[in-house]
Image 1 (cartoon, rainbow, N blue to C red):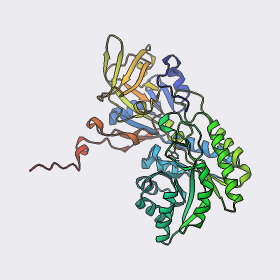
Image 2 (image 1 turned 30 degrees about the horizontal axis):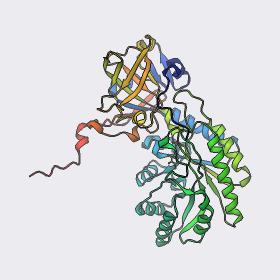
Image 3 (image 1 turned 90 degrees about the vertical axis):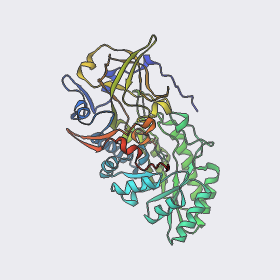
Image 4 (image 1 turned 180 degrees about the vertical axis):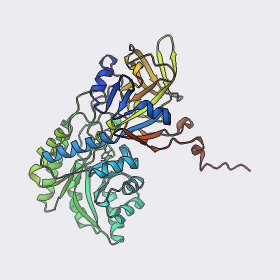
Length: 443
Ligand SMILES: *Cc1c(COP(=O)(O)O)cnc(C)c1O
């Protein structure tokens, strides 16, 4: 794959003004400091402390609507299924469900969350390379819309389970189109050597086999080529192959009702050029418009990433001979993306005074005992003394869901802003919560 640039050139960083200009939900007010929609972030931090995840319900809605509009205007019969793994909080799921989103789930927990949040079973798709018998049984019991099967072995397992229950499972075969895509080695999923999906050359044969199996109704094909994709070319390549496959399967005499185009649409963390939903819809249309198939999509990051931020406070400003370090009370256990994917996140000061102070380079780090606990290197930021607050931007996707209690750090609180009101949607974990359930087997 295209080699991933692990050391961004700080001279290419967008300025705070450029970051703000690219994020319509954020404004710097001369009095209130940084404001998300109608709520000053200082007000939230004063009330619930830091670190705290803050989500904008308005941004979730407007992004879902923009996606739905792009699909509609392309003339596609398309249903987005939000990829729950990007952020599985019930409030996020319920907000998207109200807009008409279905769900793409990858575990029993996610399936139960989606149902709990009010997403109807007939809007739920189940993906994943290792669904257990118990999970498949639940999916069949709930009669969800579609199970994306990733191997011949899984197909046999599902056939036995569904037929044993006297039920029929609607199945799409997840096909690996063998294309390179995704913003990082760890989030590319559509190459022949990746663990995901059915090898392209075996897919038509397996589809025909599926049609003979008890308890299985093959309804379509699915693909998902990676995450944080910033270029439509890999989609074009993958969808062309999938369209060929649909023709091959139909020519063999089988019905294909649906094509699940997966997720992966990237977002401009660094204000880099990124494809729009209109661009993606056009790419889907170009590949499938004359095939008369229903289209499904599995967007995760694109919907929720820009809707969230991580609010943190400066614990310490530390100067070494070589470097100014800004040590935050948030860490890699909260937001692991920089440590895990070398990800770049915008960082803005929250207070109005800090916002107009002169910038100088610093490394922004957390207190965890790992060098990888670094949010940014050589980032141009104001002085930021202890107690100053910052917002780490675009943290709505693969943020809180990936957090852990490493270093015995309780999980951060979560807040949802809606217009000029806000709600704590998850209390900060207490220290007692950390050891609840632990047993010490000492007499
Ligand atoms: C992770 C995942 C998605 C969502 O990916 P995003 O990059 O967040 O859009 C969609 N489908 C499947 C099968 C996935 O594993």
